[in-house]
Image (cartoon, rainbow, N blue to C red; front, side, top):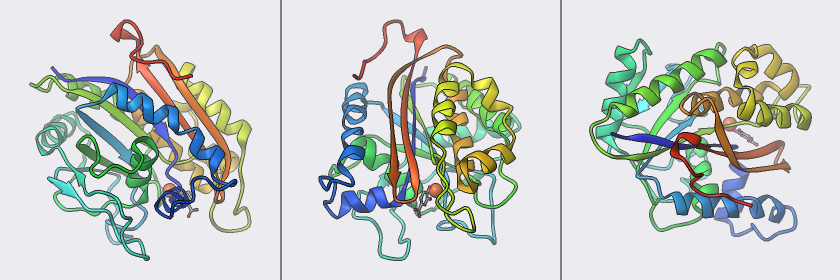
Length: 289
Ligand code: DHB
Ligand code: FE
């Protein structure tokens, strides 16, 4: 049986990918941010998952305002990095896991989550930056990835409750898979940021820190948090944080927070990273400092 052994939440700011690609991580502006990724990279290398389910949002790259799937699962063999206007990022092609992806599609759709099935898709910074901050700059990504895209671009995005429930259904599907796979699930996006309009540049560290606290100990408050509260408190693009609830829903009720990193600013945003291990594993898998 496959098992979800851990979850990881992280921001996906495109400027972080550019800083890495251009060799600027040691610059004074970027160094404190990248220092915080080191322990997460060590943790992930130690855990060495067989596959990662990566929940993210496309930013009008593979999809557009012509077609807006609320949830879409990538079942392809591979997913090339997208050209977002200045050429594709110089990162490896993402290898998919078609067998697990099709199993998830079948289980989730029969469980009444109406996912869009995607056979061909380029992946933008929403997916590649989380891989970069957790894996560094390898020749090939160290594990296959099942991409699960969520619409948080065009109103209405799914509710926090729907996202959490999808996470639970993902866990159920994984546990019904007929191979021993150790699965880590990523929830990505956020944290507080707004990129346009009068409130462009809004950052709310109090909101972000409470979000991280509640994700660990009181996810119910976040399940009940209406969209308007994210927009009011964390800026219009802060709504990306609902995707972290899919990750949290796929884990046990009681989990161990093994690592947290929060840093302001990166570009116009606050950035966060958090790692949870499922306590049912017995002893925690690893403890980052
Ligand atoms: C930016 C874009 C994003 O998608 C995001 O999540 C954070 C920041 C940006 O363009 O700066
Ligand atoms: Fe984004």
